Image (cartoon, rainbow, N blue to C red; front, side, top):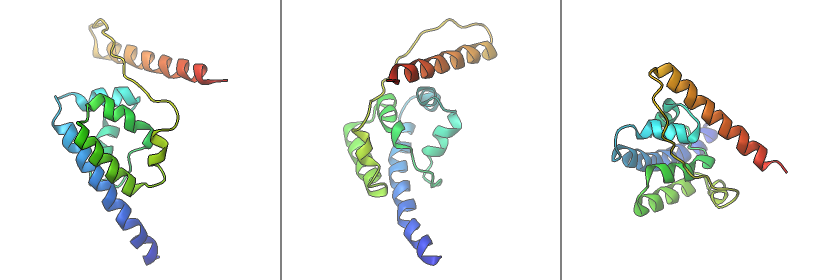
Length: 140
């Protein structure tokens, strides 16, 4: 069992390296970036906080990397350093970055409905509609 812990320790350290880079980029952006990123990924803000915290060993899922790079406007040097660290931590996952479709972000300007609850309901409705529409479009 000690061998398993030893095998996992380098990955945990490697995960922390790329998460530190991500956290630095996030902290250099305007306030609200975590929420904007969460919306773009279809996740909660707490998910973004967890995947950007080097203290948590949870890896960043590869399918979210392009969205993170786009929404956070990663500087080229930070992106290169991040990808090198990500490749060290997850050598088999990094190849998946160039596979499949890439996502892009679209910003919509919606009216304020006068209620945080109603605004959140509209946001959720549009996000769910988009996810379902894309799933239908990808069916062959």
